[in-house]
Amino acid sequence: MERTSAWALLAVGGLVAIGLSGCQKTGLKVHPVEGVVLLDGTPVVAATVEFAPLSADGLTAIGRSGAEGRFRLTSTRGGPPNGGAVAGDYTVLFKKADYDLKGTGKTRADDMDGVPLIYEIPKRYGDLETSGLKVTVKPGRNDGPDFRFELTSKKL
Image (cartoon, rainbow, N blue to C red; front, top):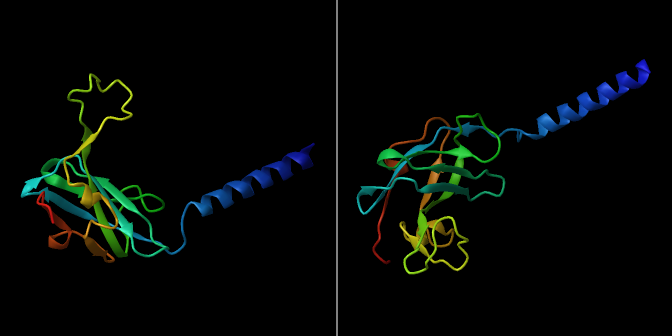
């Protein structure tokens, strides 16, 4: 009985070790990224921010803008709890939309199938093909003018 228990513990321990090592991608280090998003000169609060890597081996990093349009990114996999992004080149996406409930007779508690969205940030900024925003994350702290995004509601 002791022999079986010992082997069971070793097997479980081995699986846990393998599982934990698989949680971290070897060689990927995240770097702090903070920025600001403005639309027509006004800070955008509660926008979703996504840095989509141009490299296939990169990691997507996401965040949400808060007061004064400021955001901080967190990688979707790996990295420390305070987050950041892996060094590399990214397409930057911004999304903020809400349901247009006018005239639908629906409330937020209802099913939203068929309810159109109102894009508070123009839809083009949330699409990889049309955002037109690129940035490079470098080792170390990333903030300042390169991470200040001034969006426009004007049609291009």
